[in-house]
Image 1 (cartoon, rainbow, N blue to C red):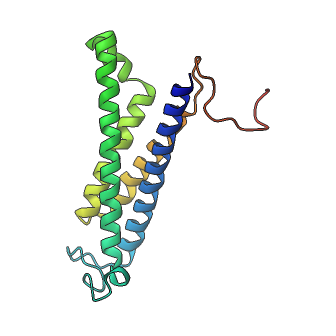
Image 2: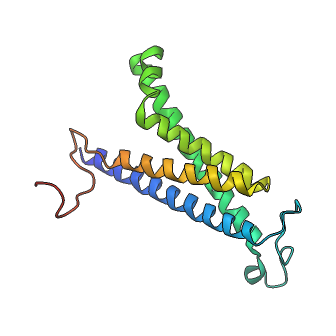
Image 3: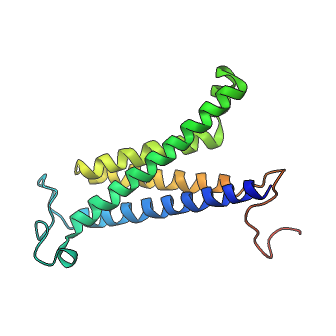
Length: 168
């Protein structure tokens, strides 16, 4: 029971970090895109790294690093979803697993994963409209996915307690 609670809290922490990273990366990328002429180059105003590299890394490089980090954490999220699907298939069979997986939370999880991949590709492809629209959808879907982890399990109870809410 304690192990289950720790596992849920660890997943909750990772989902929260992933959500915040995606939101920050999207915000920085869209704000950077507002002030850059879209001539197809990925370089920002300084064109790269100067003598004091840690002071001179330009905004474009920071956006690229943030987007790469989102792709990395998003790949972990995809791997996590794949493991869940394989476990469900092993326990319930293909047809039951696919019908269960095509409902509710799992579709929201997959929507968030795919949307963040598309937003990252739009960032690297210099497509600000797609980045803004699809990236916002990805962050929203990941925020909704986070809610799934806050649901109580019958065996472990609630993972997060909020004082003053509810009847208990």
